Image (cartoon, rainbow, N blue to C red; front, side):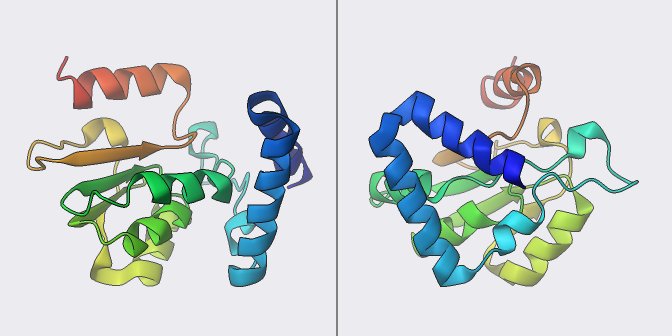
Length: 165
């Protein structure tokens, strides 16, 4: 877990500077006090059933979700799709924004079972690899990605699913 925190801090420093790091620490502390450390319990989790590809990444930092919430406040008629939902940190924020529909794409059975217990029928679940997902039925869609894939997989997802190549 310490490795993940160091990674978050280094990313904040390189991308946002000292002020960004201060904001990130502030938001993480605030939400950790509000909802606890649950989001961090699965970081880097790997059982004998999981391959390297299934290794769980760090959760989306709350500072990102704070800005996402401000940005998406006027998109209630859209479908929100969280690719690589993990333990549902982004889904919690999406539910607060009252999207027309919220879809979770998460291939881990362990995490999907948790998400279903946590959110019930408020979210539509796609529990296969994201490359098998189709958004053809959705007209207005917002995709959210945060470290869901490595570069090659992300490129393939965008080309196949979003651009139809």
